[in-house]
Image (cartoon, rainbow, N blue to C red; front, side):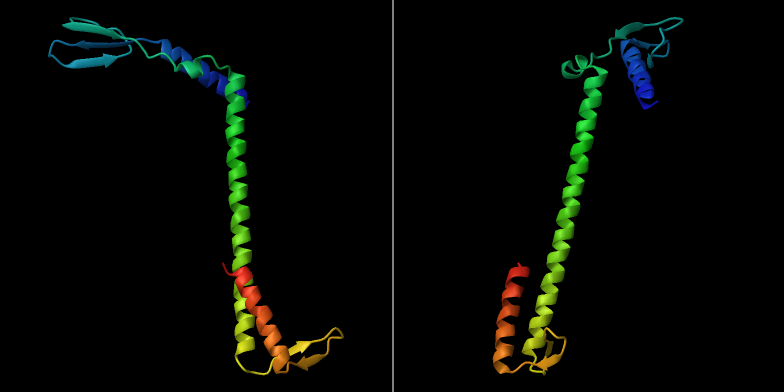
Length: 146
């Protein structure tokens, strides 16, 4: 159905492009432009030829134009998908940056920090463990916050 409508519009545009345009001045010296020839007294008549389609478009078939349209449509979709993927990656980097900064701030606050071991039991960090965790958190901030 879409091809039929597209073909009909293309055919009607081609027929309209072949039509003539008339320009003349009437009895009151007004310039009139119409697609129909003048009637009555005319002071000066001129026929304007419609411009031919561009040479690059004239030799292309309907299938070629449809293929080019589909190609442009695919490129547009690909660009939109790439933009969406970039946006998601940026949001993930931002979340990672915020989490790393929050962890670093918690470790540097001086409050007691509890961690969980492999058995799920809670233990508190001593000063050397805290310094090691601060170093790891700083590396995470540098890696995620660019």
